[in-house]
Every structure is written in structure tokens, then in C-alpha cells.
Image (cartoon, rainbow, N blue to C red; front, side, top):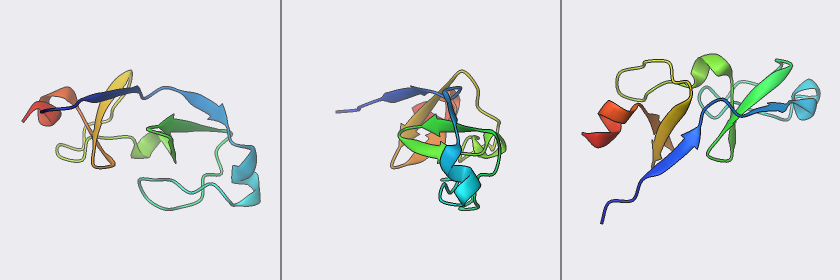
Length: 78
């Protein structure tokens, strides 16, 4: 059975914890010091790190998640 998770890739949240150095990007593990961070699949990301794990295309609007990796629709369906 194929399960599919679709998440909005543009859900922005204030990064109050980023200024204290506690929020780490799920993509690069670096602290997020931006004013806003992106929340995808209950994890925090730099905007520039939200990209497909296969083709590295920047993701916006929607993305697909499997095994804690992000994918564009095309690569997710492969």
C-alpha cells in the first residue's frame, strides 16, 4: 500500500528560538538565524534547503515526504 504525504512547503513560522541558536535546519543541520523559518513535516528548514532529494529542484507550494526526505511530485512518483 502506497501512502502519500503532501505538506505545504510555504508554512512560515516566526523563529524566536533561532535567535537563541536552538532551531537547526533539517536539511543542513545549521542554525536558522533568519527572521522566519519554514516548517515542513514538523521540522524546521532554511528556505534554500527545501529542495527535492533527487533532482535538487527548489520546492514551493507543495512537496512530498517519504522517510523524512522531501521530493518533487515527479521524483516522488518514481
